[in-house]
Structures are given as C-alpha cells and as structure tokens.
Image (cartoon, rainbow, N blue to C red; front, side):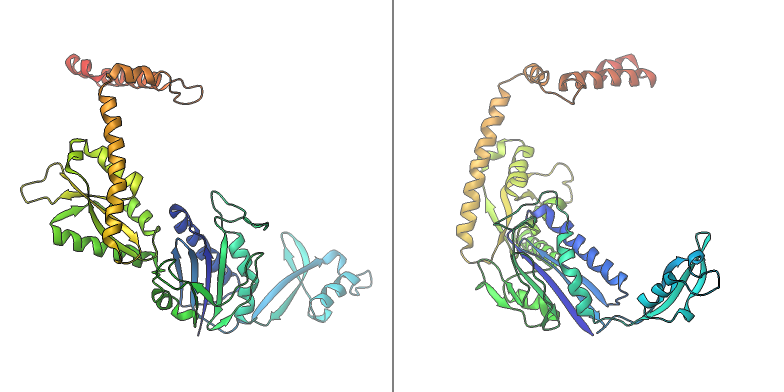
Amino acid sequence: MNTYLLEIGLEEMPAQMILPAVEQLKSLVNKTCEQHQLSFNELRSFSTPRRLAVQILGLPDKQPDRSVELKGPPAAIAKDDKNNWSKAAQGFAAKNGVEVSVLEFREYEGKDYLFVQRKELGKPVPELLQAQIEQWISQLNFPKNMRWGSYRMRFIRPIRWIVSLWNNSVVPVKLEMVEAGKVTRGHRFLSSGKSLLKDAADYQKQLEKLNVMADFEKRRESILQQVKKLEKKNGFEVELEDRLLTEVTNLVEWPTVLLGDFDEEFLELPSEVLITSMAVHQRYFPVFRKKGKHNSGTKTLLPHFVTVRNGNKKGIDTVRRGNAKVLRARLSDARFFYQEDQKKTLDEFRQKAEKVVFFQQRGSQDQRVQRIADLSVFIAKKLEYPAAQQKHVR
C-alpha cells in the first residue's frame, strides 16, 4: 500500500484561519478520493502557522476498473425511416469506441435515449492526484486573501514551498511561484532551514527532528501537560480557556510553556481588567490560587501568568523577563484608564451613550437601554410582580 503527502508551505498565517483551512483541504482531498473510487486506510491533516498538509495512507497503485453508462442522442433521431442507424447514433458509438450493435434504448425522464455500457480501465493513482492538486490549493477559501510579487494568484499568505510525495517520489505540480518537490522547512529558528523529506509515510517523525510538531492535537496536548507540571510544582491553577488555548496552539510550531510574574500592586485592579490585559492583548493564561476543600467561592487571581513560547528552553529567562516587561506596560495603561473612569459618574457615561449609535435607524445606545428598561417593567407587570419588586426592575 502507498502513502501520499501534500504540504503547502507559507509565511505565518493568522492563527484563527489555520484550522478551517486545513479542514477544507482535508474535505477536498476526501471528495476527490470518493469521486475516483480510491480506497484508503486513513486521511490525516497537519497544520502549523507555516504549513497546511494532508497525508493519505493505504492507497492502491491504481484506480479500480469500472463500468460506465453513457447517455447518447434521443431515440427519435437514432434510426432513419428504413430502421438503419443514423449518423448521430454512429457518431455516438464511434466517440465511445464501440460498435453500434451494442447500443441500447432506455427511458430517461420520460423519453427514450441511446445508452452504452463501457468499461474504463483504472488510472494510476499518482496521475489522478496530480490532476487535482492545483485545484485543491486554489479552492481553499479564506476571509481575506492577498497577492504578492507579480503573481496573479491570491492566497491567505505567500506560498514559499510545496511538497508533493507519492511514497518517496515527487508527484509534479507547479503553481506560478513554486514547483513541488521533496524539500520542506523546519522551525524558523531551531532548525537549519530547508530539509529533504525521504518518505511521505514518515512526515511527522521527520518534521519533529526539525523541531516542528505538525499535529495540532499533539501540540495542544504538549501545552496541557506542561501546564499541569507547573500547576503541580507551584500549587496553583491555570485558567485554560479553550478558545485561547486553540489560538495559542496555532501560534507555535514547537511549544514551550513558561511562568512569569507581574507586580502585586496591580492586583488592586478588578480581576476582569487584569485577565483582559493578559488573555486578550497578550495571549497569556491567568493564574489563580488553588481551591481547597472549604474554598468553593470566587477564585483569587495571583500575580503570575503562563505563556507559550515558539521555541525551546534556551534563553528562557530572557524571554520571561521580556514578556513580564510587556505585560507591565499593558497593566500600567489599564490602571491609568481605570482610574480615569473612576473619576466620572454613571450619568456622565450615560450621556456618552446618547452619542453612540446602536444600529442604523434603531437609535443610540441610551435609547436602547431605555427600551430594555421599559420592556422589563412591562414584563414585571404581566408576571404580577409585587409593587415593591417592580420599583427595582427599572
């Protein structure tokens, strides 16, 4: 049995677009296999910020032979007045390489037509795949595309290399800017750059030698296990929000988790402010005091953060200090704006809401608030709330 590998090498893609793109690619490949009746054992997908790849394991050497039924001209013009085959019927037979004697009349959508059964020999699988590769790539759909250089092709990011391997042989394909081969690229900083792939079946192992975890789930699990070790060692809890974890996993090719600190003075800010600065702006995971048996209330935020480096542990302390420095600047800004907001009354904020459009032809945010308040009072009356409670509804 055979293995086919397609790897599209790119400049760094936006994290949120990686998984949808590789799922599209996997779906297109699977559709091709179904259309051409190609059986396989497994269809795998791989993705990192710099590559989208699919690997088909257990492919046959060639497509199975099949019997194809072809529809020809209507029966009304298939024979002349003397019951001889017409030129239309003879042309249909010649086109499909058969004698007119094997043509059959069959009903189709209420009318009779000529039909012929023809045996098609299966084509070599590499030949079938080669004809589809360019379409797979060009059919990938992204919210935003770009052009680069003088090329006409549009894609999410510039394509820098393509690997197209049938076992250990190249399946040729050429786009405007790049020709497929055996050469992939490892981690941007932890490898020597270009590297020759020996066999399509060993794709994952070969990339790991180049410091690239090509499997999204494997990178995600690596991050989770490293975080668990930190939690066990330090006795705290790291909040791993799933969406952020997915984004961070798609930002790295070789994940290394590290723990950083920030000044305790910032803990005077509401935890929502700190978490937003860490998670939304910096893609850091917040750290909380571990809950005890008798502590089931609000979680207590600690002056630490967890982040994921795209690399190994070399120079990790320098990276830690750099991340802490950036976070301090973020938190200082957040504290400034929070303190400025505290100087204003709720009425001042409400006046600002009068100038903010809620939706076209739907008024301002202040008018929206008034509508919600009126609706709340109406519902309270319908539900026959006591008068004392109705006073607090608005």
